[in-house]
Picture (spheres, rainbow, N blue to C red):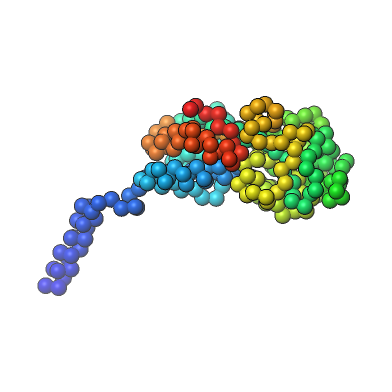
Length: 276
């Protein structure tokens, strides 16, 4: 008799799960990852989006970087990738689609102990080359590099012939700091006396007062100076997903391009240029 009662109770429990109203666990999950300089902007946007869309939960783990996130989207391990570069032909051939999201200044970031407020591109190139080993205030210059194949490195090479030569020289020196990811490079600038690096402004605005953002050739890197064309050096951001992406992806992307989404992104250093 006891076993019969247990069986009845077990069946009842199963039926209860079938007829019970949906719980929070039944919410649709949207999995996002990508470049660290993009995820710091996505974080506050995701928080705002979820307040307006209680049935969608956004999951973001530690940054995988653009390439790994794109691959994860193609393998259905992610729903949306935030990429600091455009898709390669082979990636597009896998059924992936992209759209431009926006652009952020590629800014000169320095450790908080550095007393300089601005630098010229020629002076920066000399720091990278090693011909200017100290800041005007006397601090030893510690250049933070990114991997040779990284988008930020390619952008830095393209800034000027002097910068191209200076960066090439820096890549051949043994005393350089190498940040494999956006976040690792940013941490080097934060924690290393005299450190300097070229990276997305979004990283600095996500952690106010953690580093110094220097003027470059007299122009302050900002969303406004990028929009006006005064600041010329930018890093583009792209949104990558699959053709068969869940409906929640389109809903979130629409929010990113909305007036509210654009306003939040601007506060974190990204000028949204995608379709309104």
